[in-house]
Image (cartoon, rainbow, N blue to C red; front, side, top):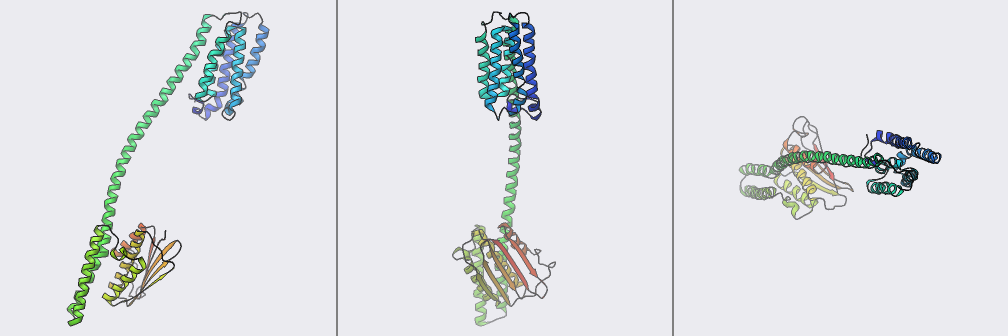
Length: 392
């Protein structure tokens, strides 16, 4: 119920401590008065002091819950108890036992650092008051007045040691639990890192080698059907695609930005990408940039570039589009990328809406930068890809 310090009291202890310590003080006062009866020449004067002291002790009941908010009232109350004890001792040394009540009061009324001063005052003042009365105290009263503080001090030290022991045990248990959680988190982090790197490499391979090889195969097939300058032009495009794919593969392995973004801004890189698509496939790609162009985080720019690359490749390979529109829009908080084609379209349950690896890779990329991706399409109605990412 009650702890060593006032702050250690629980709610029930706060309610009961005041009455309990008041009862202890009154009981000690009554016991000392009983033994002093008949041994005091001026017992009427002593009785008046006893009654005043008893009334003063009862003030602890309303004061105790407010002791922290009113420290000066608390100090005044404790001083009143000591003054009453000193007055009683000067009249009869049998009241030395009552003075011992100051020891527990010192610890429950004051914080620890002030409680020790209160204990010192409780020990010194009764000693100074002894000898002033004409009635020496019996030996057992002196023993009780010394044993009380010693027993309380022993309980104080024991309770504090037990509290520290339990705190140390809880700390050791928490450290062991934290060590286990730390090891588990490290294992999960390593597994997540490995999975994340695998997904990154899969996306990069799809966006570089797979698309490059697809373009090479397309150009070689076209070259087989042509002769002369057209064949040479196709083979030249094959060499350029192979060179670009090799360069992009190396940059993907090294986790570098795509080469078109290394030396230019995102709108220029997208215009260059659109030009390559038009040159290799003959599909007309129109690019447009709106809003105030400004630098974005490298990962955001790479995401938008790869989404545009995948959307254009899908429109070229699957949609059989004749025209593609690519729009990059800057606003205060977001950047929008729209890729719209006039191709054959598809049903959401067919190969769209994230069921194809390319669309799924686009969605993962956008989600990694806290963005959103939507794909709208219908058979014969073309396809629209919209990516929205934070501009900050």
